[in-house]
Image (tube, rainbow, N blue to C red):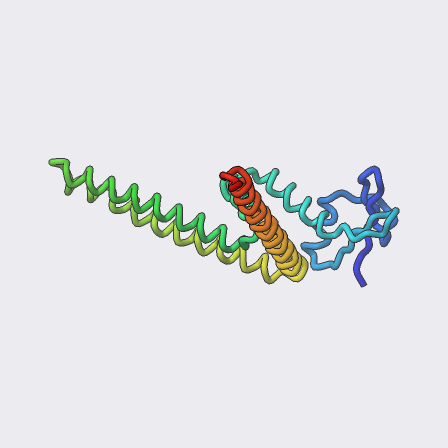
Length: 199
């Protein structure tokens, strides 16, 4: 049976098991300990668990300041129906392309310099360390995403949110195509009505 936390209109959270008010950090601790927590609106009984967990993630991000890059967060908001994994994959590809372009440019500079071999020797050690670090970062991000997807509380919610976003995106596309067709039809009828009229 889940631990029920009620959210009041003043945004206070009340743990019904311990009969005391709790903070988001307390709920985060419960979830991290493996407890099943359900947050409900005290007046309506609406399930606010997903919203509360999202707030916890937001607070963690705010404290860590940079757990996820600003550009990645923007891409997540802009992407609509794309999955988090797709956005992360595209971000990692972009990072790789930038790194490769920078590496090519450094190689060009080194090859043009009379001190090229010496500079190349100096740069090869840090390059290897950067490549190794990038591989560890990539693996860490992929592992984190897998953990999020496989987490019993977060994974299904991510799938539900992604499904909702795909549905909204499909509706928008449908509306835009309907609007485009109606505009094309109205401009055709405008042309027909403005043309010469035989008498």
